[in-house]
Image: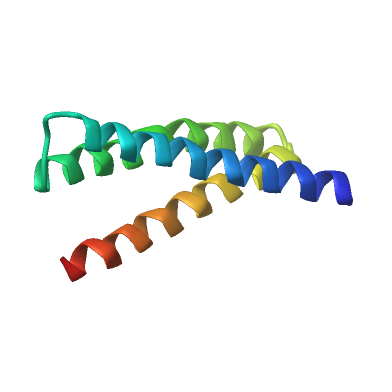
Amino acid sequence: GRLDEAVFEKTRANVYGAFRTVLLAAGHTRAQGEEARRFFMERLEQIPKRWSEAYEEGKRHGDIARMALESMKLDTVRKIREKLRQVWERE
């Protein structure tokens, strides 16, 4: 229902916000260019590992709501990754 949609949207916004923070951190380090990209892409791989584990745990326990939430987070990360690759390929 509406509450579920609100939770999903808030969670999606939190995922984008978290990676915005990581991107800003990459930009504030001494790393530049390819090194900053590598830093960000490593985080883009590391952080979702917990979500994959949570999805699998939800699957083991038949927790469809948890599976849906973790799946949405993972899908959001895939979208972020794809968009950044498109942007960085243009440079």
